[in-house]
Length: 280
Image (cartoon, rainbow, N blue to C red; front, side, top):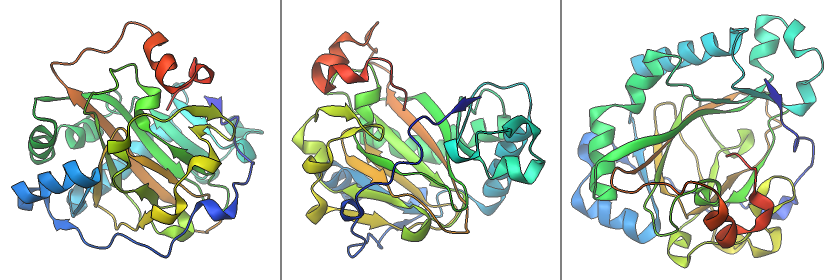
């Protein structure tokens, strides 16, 4: 278990403008057309409604609940506001204290099955142009009232892959995700603008003054929806003071033919030295 060391610092309210929202999406992974793949290349994201079934949602939630309630895993990050006495909390209080779980598929076959869904992998192969390989898996949670912000960033800033790698994130909603409880925010097209230096402030993040707020859009999602996004797309999520939880899974896939660097030196030269020991 680890404590979120960045929790409790409020972001400038101006960083998250919800007036523009992405509402159109494709209904199911089997409905993705070639034009949709081209749209991903242009905008850096693709929203797929009903990407996983209701039974998969139930199975995923059960799998994550089992992991949170286990007492023998170190792959849990809790919100700083809930750090004191975490191990003594009852089940429901414990469930409402967790911010992130890492390496989830190796612990639970139900979660692995979703990450390896043939329909999802087929779409990813069309986007990446190569066989996709799972490189990172986690659950991203905003507990009621204390869910912290994930500041604007690029995912490739966290990965030791070459800066021209097409790594794709798959963010799958297990709860309704809306502006009030911290839905995803994106800036379409920014994946084509290259890497941006990140700084350690409220997290490992793009500098607030470099965020193109006038171009940002909220991505409200329902349970089972999936947002696919490029590893250089600028994205983040606001804090949640809502009474509603926001559970999601996030998987990253890299081309099978691309190997990561052995160390972080190349990444640090691109994204900045303050990222030496950061984790996503």
